[in-house]
Image 1: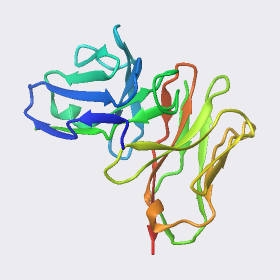
Image 2 (image 1 turned 180 degrees about the vertical axis):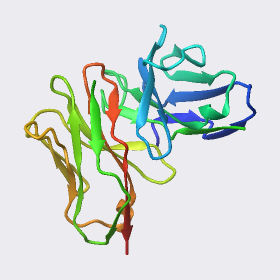
Image 3 (image 1 turned 180 degrees about the horizontal axis):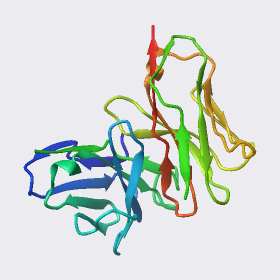
Image 4 (image 1 turned 135 degrees about the vertical axis):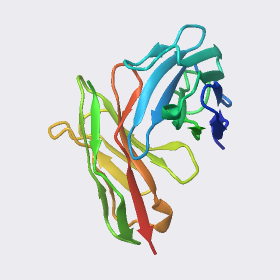
Length: 120
Length: 111
């Protein structure tokens, strides 16, 4: 079964509202999680690196106040898209790395199934 | 910065045909290289990897060799099956331990 779970898989919201996407590592602890955004027919673009217990590190050009990332535990990171607009519509994917001694295939990066956000 | 370029798809092949998906990269230092596969409705899965020059990664009949001189990591399979239909992503891992992905190549194998 999947070792990284994302929820929800699909979400539709109205412009101006906020949406939270959860990323959970199953059966292993992930001190580091990564959030990607995928545009149609484009590559996955790294948005931020989420570190448990500390602030996320955002890539250049990603608005930290718009894409809030919280990594409150070793198995959960959340991405909140605040005041969503139609241009935020995209496919968001998280990944988590199993650290030494904490789970399967130590060091391998596992990916969630992705969350498709549509902002009307 | 780091970047990965892979051939655009879609690639349409008949069953048992030979597959090549080209991938080239630019990076500082000596990155690790990966191929990921995404089946319809599923998340990305690691297909194979190579961590140093001349290494060959292989899995499920797929192979790719880390060519430092040509900065390439082309994916090959001698005989594709319908079940191989998916999107394939080439990626590299640089110093920050995050992956840089290519744009993905959709493979459609017809019976």
